[in-house]
Structures are given as C-alpha cells and as structure tokens.
Amino acid sequence: MKRFLLLLLLAPLLVSAESPRLVPDVSQRKIEIIYSFTGAELLLFGAILYPGGRVPSDDAQIAVVVKGPSEPVLVREKRKIAGMWINADSADFRSVPSFYALASSKPINKIVDGRTAVIYELGIDNLQLSPASGGDPAADRHFEEGLIDLKRRGGYYSETDSGVEISEGVLYRARIAIPARVPVGHYTAETFLIEKGRVIAAATRDIEIHKSGMEAFVARAADRHSFVYGLTAVLLSLALGWAASTAFKRLRD
Amino acid sequence: MDLYLPIAGLSVNMLVIIGLGGLVGVLSGMFGVGGGFLTTPLMIFYGIPPAVAVASSAPQITGASVSGVLAHGSRDGVDYHMGAVLVAGGAIGSLAGGFLFRLLQDAGQIDTVVTVMYVVMLGGIGAVMARDAIGSILAEWRGESPPGSGRRHHPLIAMLPFRWRFYRSGLYISPLAPFLLGFLTGVMTVLMGVGGGFILVPAMIYILGMSARVVVGTSLFQILFVTAATTMVHAMTTRAVDLVLTGLLLIGSVTGAQLGARLALKMKPEYLRLALAFIVLVVAIRMLLGLTWRPPEIFTVQPL
Image 1 (cartoon, chains in turn blue, orange):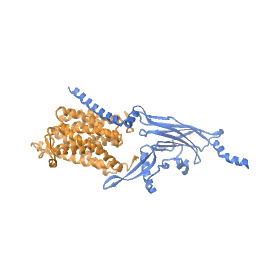
Image 2 (image 1 turned 90 degrees about the vertical axis):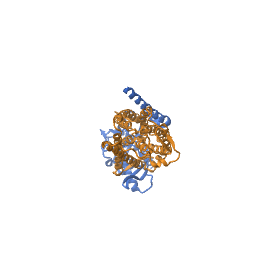
Image 3 (image 1 turned 30 degrees about the horizontal axis):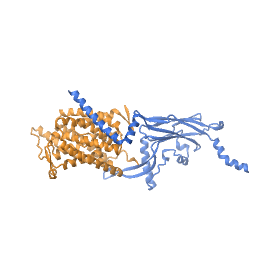
Image 4 (image 1 turned 30 degrees about the vertical axis):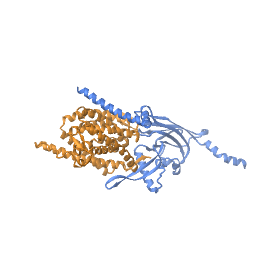
C-alpha cells in the first residue's frame, strides 16, 4: 500500500520525464535597426527530443509565436455626424501586443482545442487584450475586432497555417517576417509542441529589437537632450538655407 | 534608396521625400509661402505619423524661408518693425497652440478640427485671391488700367487704438492688428504644421493693406522666427522632430526655393496670384471631400 502511494506521488515526475522536450533556437537573438532597415526575416528552428528512443509520434504538431512588447492603447471609432466623419466612441485596452505572428504546421484551430488555444493565446482571436472600459462585452468585442483588423492589415498581426515544416518528425523550422515598422523592444519567440489538441511541451527564446548606430544616437538625443536636439534642427535648417542661397548666388555671378 | 527614419520609426524612399521637399520649395520661392500646407498632408498621405509630419515640417519651412529673407532683406523688402510685432504675436500664439493641441488631442478631435480649419481658411483665402487676380487679369485684357484698391485697409483695423507708424509698409495703424495676425498664424503653425504664409500674405495685402513691396519679405521674416520657435516647442514637448526626415526635406526645399524665386521673376504677378489661388482651392476642396467621404479607417489607435 505504501509503495503504491509513493508510486502515485511520483507518477507525474515519471510521466514528465517520459514526455518529449523541445530544443528551439532562432536565427537572430538581436535585430538591429540601422539606416537601411527594411524588415527582417526570422528563422525559428529546433528539434523535438523523444526520451528513451521513443518513435516520434505522427500526430505531433508545432506552433511558433513571435510576440512584441505589449502596450496599453486607446481605440477610437469614427461615425458620420452632421455629414462629417468624426471620432465618436472609444475604448481602452490594457495589454495589446505590438506584434504577433503565429505559424503552425496545420491550421491552428484544427490542432488545438478551444480551451488550450485561449490559455496559450494561440491565434489572433485568442489574444487577451484586457478591455478596461468595464462596459458591455458586445461593445468591447466590436472595438477589439476593429483593432485586430487594423493590426492585421498593417502587417503587425499574422497567422500562417502551414508556416512550420516538420521533417522526420523531429526537426522543425519556420520563417517569420518582421516588417520595417515594428516597434523596438523585447520580443519573445515561443515554440509549442502539440499532440491530440493539447500543448505537451513549450519553450521560449528572447529576441531584442533595437535601433543602433546613427539611428540610435538620433533617437536617444531627441529623448534625453531635447533642447540641444531642437537647437540642432533649427541650426541645420538655417545653415542649409543659407548654404543654398550663397551657392546659387555664386552660380549666377 | 530606402532610409530608416529614427523618430518616425519606418523606412522611406529618400528620393520621394527630397522630391516632395523640392516641389514645396519651388512653391515657397515663387509665392513667399512656406509650403507647409502641402508638405504636412502629403507626408501623412505617404504614411508618416501625423505628429512627426507636423513637427518635422516646421524646421523645413525655416530653411526654405532663409534664402527668401536674405534676398528680400538685401533689397529693403523686409519691414523689420512690422516683422517684430508679428513675431511677438506668433511666439505667444505658438504657446497657446501647444496648449490647444494637447486639449484637442485628449478629446480625440484634433484631426477633425485641423481639417475644418484647413477647409475654412484655404477656401476663404483662395476665393478672395482668385476673384482679385481674375479681376485684374480681365481688366488688363480689356486694356483698362487695373482697378486700384479702393481702400487701404479694412475699416475695422482703423478703429483699433494706439496707432504706430510702419514706414516701410507705408502704414499708420494700431500694432494690435499685426499682433493678432501673428498670434493666429502662431497657433496655426503648431496645430497644422504650416508656416502660415498662405494666410499671412493675403491678410497683409487685403486686411492690413501693406505696401506690396514688403509683403513677401516680411511674411517670410515672421515665418522664419515662428517656425524656429515651433521646432523648439515640438522638440521639447512632443519630441516628434525627425532630424533625418527634416534633413531630406531641407535638401529638396532649399534648392527648390532658389528655382522658385527665379521662376517668379519671369511670371506676371497676377498670374502668379491666380496660380496660388488655384492650388489653395484644390487643397481646400480635397480636404472638404475628405471630411464627408467614408474614411478608409473607421478605427484609430493611440498609445496611452
């Protein structure tokens, strides 16, 4: 009886030792935005380790998610008032990811059940944006749809149904495009191993996107030394205006 | 030729921005307006965030007006006395504009208010200028002498107290009138990202009745100082001035301004005024339509 209880207590540990593990990596841990930045392509790849030489499952699916820093936003809706389109109603959302890209080996709603999708925020419609207005859910839903549509068309949110390739059941890779207008900050790349509608393993890697070189210097100066920065802008404009006027005068004479 | 703008946070085609600056520069040299009323909407149309477009066009207008002020100043085309009163009004106006900007932004109505302001002002001024220019062109065709301006300045101006003499403008009027005019353009510079030349020049001619010789130079003088002050206000409050964007615009506009000034010498002033009236009216009509058409985006997102 005692031994049975012990076994029962240890069972989860034994099972977890039995379940597969993910060894993920990303092609770039750091993305530097320099003067010629027009976007980047991230390669997310890795291996699924099956302990004890178990045969890879046929049903194993992979989903990868790249998420940008979350921020609170205010969404406004325009309505036609007195013949003009004017901002009328608005709603607050507390945590809106600035970037969200999902790639999976099969359509995401076919490989996970609804509850799992909500828990792991798999799929754009399952993002938890935390509406803060406390108003009626229908109105919040309406604004959420508008916000998501805007983000999707802007290239900030995307879902790719067959964006992950799995070879031999153990190696996987996915490409995710990072558009030029992404906000800077701390990004995460999450990989989920999914079997029978449930997530059985997950792993996260961090990605930093930041401005570097001349661009970083200008952005920092504008923020920290705003007076000198403004003065520089004024002096630059005066100098260029004066230079052009003298140059053209020389040309004419 | 893509270039990343550090403050706007996106890549743009360098040549498009330089070309835009050049086009606006030509207009500024020809008509003595800063051209902000074109740059700002066009940049927003190109995808640059409105705040950055407004803030970055201010130093561009400064640059474009430098050569104009130098050129007009060397042939006594600037009434510095009048200019100082306008600049004083403009400085106070830009502070008031900054306050108003914040207020309207919080209410979410900044875009609508700015657009309505554009429509009313551009529409009104464009119509007055077109009528006047067409009148003098028709008179010239009929071989008559152009209709002399019946009154020097608006009767309301004559009613204001404390009169000063503005020798170069040939006026004996209250400084309150140009001060208020300066104030109004200062508010507009901050709100709309314009130098205010398109309102200043006609107001100087039709309301103040200034002598035509000093109108353009004095207007550019006021624009130079007020846009420089506005750049500082934006750099320190909104922090939306993008030096790279400004630099590109400047390269185009300072060159364009020189070409424009050359072109202006070859054209008759009546036709020049008619052309400006036409451009102003087109922009006004386009914006009026923009208010009533269903916008491409019903929802807008603003970070908190």
